[in-house]
Length: 210
Image (cartoon, rainbow, N blue to C red):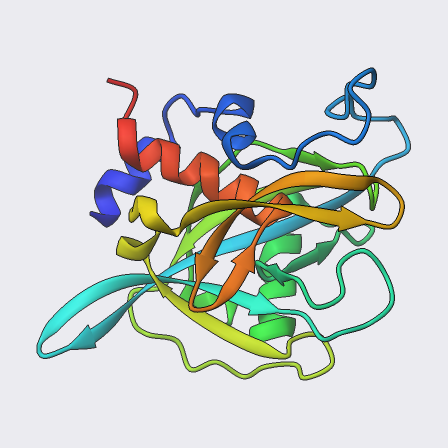
């Protein structure tokens, strides 16, 4: 399956059509929220795939993190390892550095398989470059407790289960009521940018552009 994913990532991507399946309802219908402003802040995230063996069978998993509770738009949310690009870095280098800093997985142990479509996040003004990497053995994670409150190791097979795709009406102080789609993963509601990135990856796995 790893070889198949590698080939898919290096072919045509679903792009915005895959992302929009899990996009929050817009707060303002008259504004194109996907237009990227010139002053956006660049960031990268990593969708890290790795095997976990059980009963002599290995199953692919991916790593999600829960951020600590703090003031701001992303406090307490479920996300991929990642963060803001530093001066002189490539997007790929940012994804690898942030992954090492947040969950302790060395870049030397990872193979970058490809890149998903970039995604603009209006509330934080970030333009995110998502990468997919593979670690051939189960990593030994070391969490930065300032950045990561919990590591959520998720079987890739769970992402393919349609029953985890749900939606609710949420109330936001600045935007009022909005319909929010999310993946329910081990009791966590994975929504927003993380859900949209997972949605494109899922579209890649599901239809294979047949």
